[in-house]
Image (cartoon, rainbow, N blue to C red; front, side, top):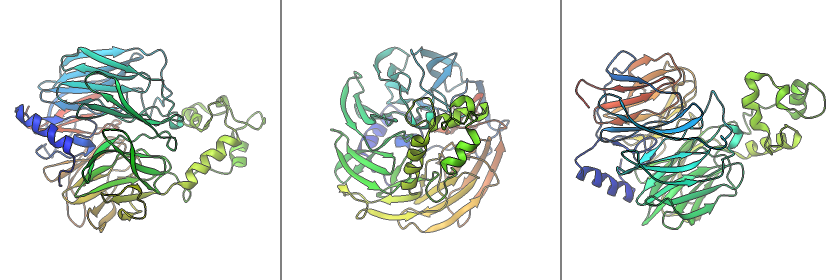
Amino acid sequence: MKPITLSWLILASAWAAQGSTAAWPAFRGPNSSGVSADAKPPINIGPTNAVLWKISVPWSPSSPCIFKDQIFLTVFDDHKLQTRCYRRADGALAWSRELKPDKLEMYHSTESSPATPSPATDGKRVVSYFGSFGLICYDLNGKELWRHELPVALSLGGYGTATSPLIVGNLVIVSRDRDEQSSLLALDLRTGKKVWETPRPDSNGTFSTPITWLNGRVEEVVLAGALRVKGYDLKTGKEDWMVEGVSSYVCTTPVTGDGLLFFAQWTEGKSDSPWPPWEKFLEKYDKNKDGVITLDEIDEDSREYFRGLDMNRDGKIDKTDWDKLLGSLSKGENVLVAVKPGGRGDITKTHVAWKATKGLPYLASPLLYNGRVYCVKNGGMLSSFDATTGKSYYSQERLGAEGDYYSSPVAADGRIYLVSVRGKLTVVKAGGDLPEILHQADFKERIAATPALAGDNLYLRTKSSLYAFGPAKAL
């Protein structure tokens, strides 16, 4: 995969100068790619195989980020938001810093957490973003350097904030896509002061993480949102281009390489909406027959999910909310799209290299590895496409590990690592006309976090634990 982001090349050179290749600096590694160029993790990973250490960690869906001998993790515990640092050598807790916000954002207790975003590091600082607080920065010893407080986020469907911060050069960038007043925000990494903020009035509730892309000679921030993928000038925040015709609600993060930018997302849309007509929904849940539905009329197991249908946050679900929901869904298109560089303005018709419409992921971001794009679809189905042409090598091939996939695939040393929500880990050989399964293991508990790769190690966060895998004395 050709390197295409100037700031990441500079950062990689700086790490190499410090004598370390053990760096997984953000959600899903360098530029959220999911790829380590030099890691060599073991194949036979499992709850009792290749385990170097295992520690108990309170549950949150955030993923580890790594620099040298430190692992950084965000945690929600005892109603407090925490940034933690663990030692890679043995998993010992090196330090923990906590915040107790005045008000927590709305979130789903089983699906998400107020500590869903993963931290990011530049090798000198570590930055955490919480939708209930804003951004906070520490040095690698846990000393607070700055904080930038923000209004509590109101996210789509009440799932909470899931986007992670991006560090590039002297900027830290975060998506503030919300139910209203959405924006893309850039702060000075050294001071926490705002450098620029660009409104995104046509996007709401996006869970995608921003990435960088060297588009021609312009370094950009790319962020996927409702119905559109957009590119912004890194220095100024000015919108450079957009591609229309993607999903109405976005959970996945784009990837770049091989001269292209790739985005893939499936969500409930106009062709496969699960929602019945308003009259049928009202008939089922409107117990007091007053023409609206309040949360106390919905069974407790479904209440957290359905509260997100209250689109205007007035405490009830009515036909206005329903029409807004169905109207948004009807505009979305489920697609894997490859975008060519060089475009400005609306480039939907001029700079789309190819598209695919089958085998699309819901929460797991696409993976670009060794000239192919991989997507894992809920149900445990893997698809593989030629990155340059879009040719399908295989489509929706079953891995024998069913269920949803919230964790995004990662790759190293010719292998792809995939993890299901049910806790099934599958290792697949990259390439081939069909997915060749090299190993599978069952952790028998929920996994939503994406694995992290560093050196000869793989780190995996489950519902109750953080594991380190690797050969003996690999740390």
